[in-house]
Amino acid sequence: MDKTAEIIIDGKSYRYPVVVGTEQESGIDISQLRAQSGHITLDDGYGNTGACRSNITFIDGEKGVLRYRGIPIEEVAEKSTFVETAYLIIWGKLPNQAELRRFSDLLTENSMLHEDMKQQFEAFPANAHPMAILSSMINASSCFYPELLTSEMKPTFDLQSARLISQVRTIAAFAYRTSRGLPIIYAKPDYKYTANFLHMMFSHPLKDYELDPAAVKALDLIFLLHADHEQNCSTSTVRMVASSRANMFASCAAGVCALWGPLHGGANQAVLEMLDTIHKSGDDGSKFIEAAKDKNSGKRLMGFGHRVYKNYDPRAKIIKKACDDVLEKLKISDPLLDIAKKLEETALKESYFIERKLYPNVDFYSGIIMRALNIPVEMFTVLFAIGRMPGWIANFKEVMEDPSARINRPRQIYTGPALKHYVPMKDRK
Image (cartoon, rainbow, N blue to C red; front, side, top):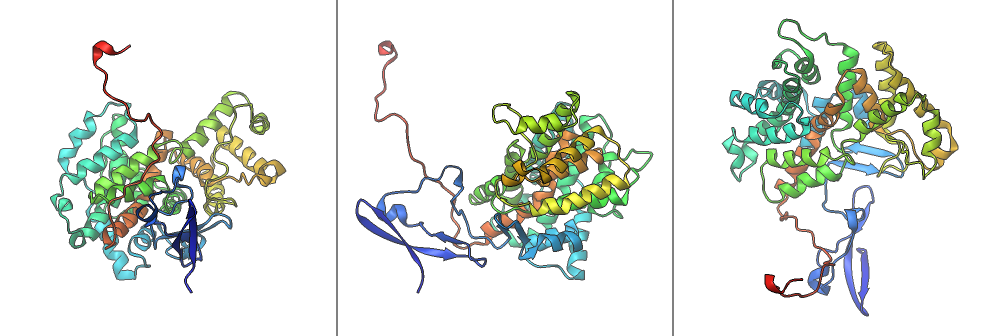
């Protein structure tokens, strides 16, 4: 017998089906609640609201579980690459050799931007935030592909998804270089995805950037670990915009804007800013940790704890090892990184942090790695957007392929003034 839930309002009973997912997550389908009872649910921040059914990513925050299309993140991180993971997330299966080659070729062939876009980069002020440039230029790029505006997605989906994943790193690198008055560097067809990004970021016209395999591997892992993370703020934004039948580029540009917020994509930047503040105060991290325990101190330990994970963030376990490896291989000597290690060591052994489940999260370690790779702080969130693009595209695809999908339109509980009437200017006080 199918499970149902009962809601009683003013003595009248309403029954609604209980929906159970493949991992036994359950929810109450209240889609008919307003029509039948005249009531809605109120859930500020949507913390208890399932906005969709999705086949892409599973998270169990209590147990510290993350799976892409059913595959544990630990296996994906150990055995896969960002490009292969992007294919897995978007198309729902691991590619065979021919499929991966075709996808990789599409990424290589579509890394170039239309030459007319160059002047648009130059139009931004030198101090423009790269996330503003990224969202604007993703939208601008779509103007050169009129086929995006057609209602039929399937014929060009493979091309457009590869084009967007490829061009997002090109736009990011161009934004960085124009902000510093540097000439634009194009991708090389013989470089792989992440190596090409570093090449476009740091090479010079007369001398290519020397690619360190440890650096490339670490950055590829950062992209992979951020490729999707269920219905977070930016992914939900992509789905919301896609529900209006906006095109892929417009929907993902909206995701960039949502990710820009410091409470979402800016967390790893906040980690480095915290470390810098500690260093400038002459502290090795010890005093800051003590202050962070005092609610009245105003000090907050950034990069620790997570909204979803009430256990150790599984991505953090993976990236911690990569962080240790890359710092050792690159022989980095940096006082901020020394402070980071002090904070990490303390938080992992002190009962105060363990009891509150304030473990270092993925943002803590990714910020450290990106600093070690000389990625400027203002580019941290941009790299997050590059990594998250496959997840946004996969969610866009789900919305477009759902025959029962309709435009998203949340309700509200109005708390403003009751009926009032217009007062002429001469009668206003």
